[in-house]
Amino acid sequence: MEQQNLTSRVREFLLVGLTQSLALQRFLFVVFFIVYMMTCLGNLTIITTLITDHQLHIPMYFLLGNLAFIDLSESSVTVPKMLWDLLSKQKTITFGGCMSQMFFFHFTGGAEVLFLMMMALDQYMAIHKPLYYLRIMNWGVCVGLVAGAWLGGFVHSIVQIALTIQLPFCGPNTLDNFYCDVPQVIKLACTDTYMVDLLMVFNSGLLTIIIFIILIVSYTVILVKIRTHVPEGNHKALSTCRAQVVVVSIHFMPSIFIYARPFRKFSLDKAVSALYTVITPMLNPIIYTLRNTEMKNAIKRLMNRVFS
Image (cartoon, rainbow, N blue to C red; front, side, top):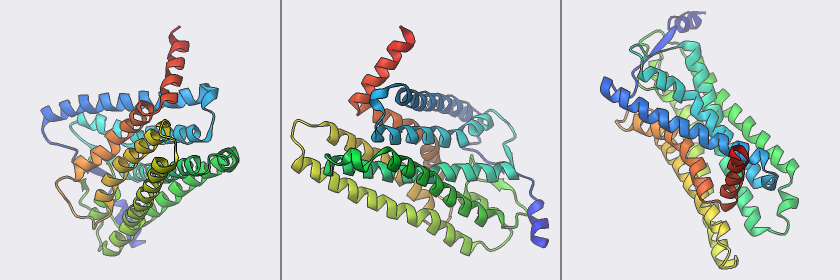
């Protein structure tokens, strides 16, 4: 009962934001608004193209469509609130809103990590087992993988929230970030959070490092296989694989910096968080469409149907 009373004392959190300079806030609003619009446009274009173009109804593009949906969702969890706060004098979020934002942020982020692993698996099967690819990566398997990714993201997020929400928050309530995330929120708890810190690092940081290493090793094996066994004229697989390595790197490296260490404040934390939450969801569709001839042709066909 006492812990519940302590928790109820904090009704809202005050967000420090990215900067205290009003001029810089206006500039960042314009930049991030453009980035967010490009993120929405890019990912919605991919989703629409994959739904309407029957030539792309194959496993690889089914996974790509889900990745685009996750990027759009993950960006929408934090960016609209950040844009609103950049134009507001008082940057606050309710306790319930903070917990909800953390839940959906880690839900989509955890699912995206698993989707990137599945796309590596898909690429491996396409290169190493081309004759059995459609038999192995059939629609039943793909749907099961997608469902597993969302379930994994849900479990990951529930663990994060369960460890956080049980902490007593009795003040202060100033959150040194532009959105609610575990590292900053647990610092405000009115109790020793050393064990919670360790559990969080294990749940997010250590798993992220392990998955990142697995993916890098997997793509190294795939790239070696492509160079030694795939005909020289077939550059499509090599280009696609390189694009996926870029996507994996720009997703995992900021995550490792934020979560794979004890939760201490560093000057680069906010910049890395902005890269992870704002920029990366925009880069994914750009990388995939520019490196994929079939996607570019399908988008052209979609534009011709829309504007003809």
